[in-house]
Image 1 (cartoon, helix red, strand yellow):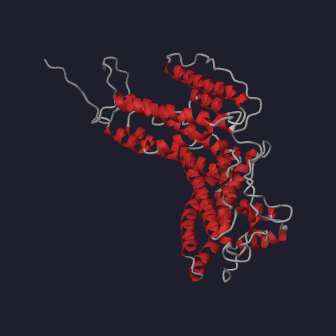
Image 2 (cartoon, protein in one colour; image 1 turned 30 degrees about the vertical axis):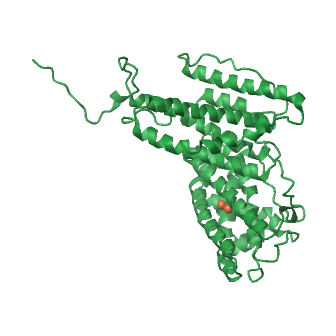
Length: 451
Ligand SMILES: [Fe+2]
Ligand SMILES: [Fe+2]
């Protein structure tokens, strides 16, 4: 008599069961396991690039690093989508970088110089793309086509990611050849660290202690330095004299609508502060990091469009006074992040809508369509950021065990902002609940009829 086979149509657990006789074929669950590792490597690459922004003085290089970090998160999104289609736990049960990968990245990120960091990042990206290449060679072009299609997109970013550190590495210690040897030792150390990580991940003894190679970094140059490195072409405002850089009449656009362009240009300080948030806040849902990476890159773009336009108008960045970024200290780390994020997304960004909106028409009337369209793109981006703020503001307080509702966060953020600007409690209470009057206090208006 034939044996009856029962099939439960709602049970897919067999896709995750161990099967010994698969004869070297990659099952869907295997693809998932391999993709998961790459996913966390991408995340750590995005963390190390974001973490190093404030360690580098060069304004342009800062912006490039943020872009790279953002690109890594776009790869993560592609991988996560595919991981969710495949059997297995998706990006992982812990939803955070596995310890071995985390430790390895920490070891190669805490570097003695920008050049050393560039060498670490270059190696990480090279190894990352090696993994993609090796896996591509193993994936079945029909069965695993949806994975391969995603790899195609990721491949298009390879050049941009690889290019960033090249010059630093090539000319490391070019003026101090006596340090060149040390730099080569660092490169060897990074390579060994990576190898140690791979060996451990591939070994069956998951919990065996790991012997990491040693390299003593006496004074790390990054990541997340206690003081952000400043580009000498962007001299800082004196905050004992002015509430914020935009109030300093020294800047040549101060008395005209063109000050809008300068305000855009100065947004690198917001971007840089966001990099500390991205690197510092641990174990938030991954969608938070996708959103903050996008937000940070947008602020970099706003700064880029502003500086580009100022230069087109014939100005030099040295003629202006620039706002410093806010670096949270060890002591205030816990509250500084949610407070800064809430103030940015619930006060500064919504309030900036008013002058941006007015400047769109004013610029057109003055015959400056590029500045006008910049404000339009700016508003489109800021609308996105305000929504990010609604999504994550209260969660961030909750996450650091300082539970607040979304409403109380908004009130708190507004109060703190006005206090910082030097208003007394009576004045604050008067305007706190009226929009846009509140913004009149929180920011400045522009002279729209002056160009
Ligand atoms: Fe912005
Ligand atoms: Fe923004």
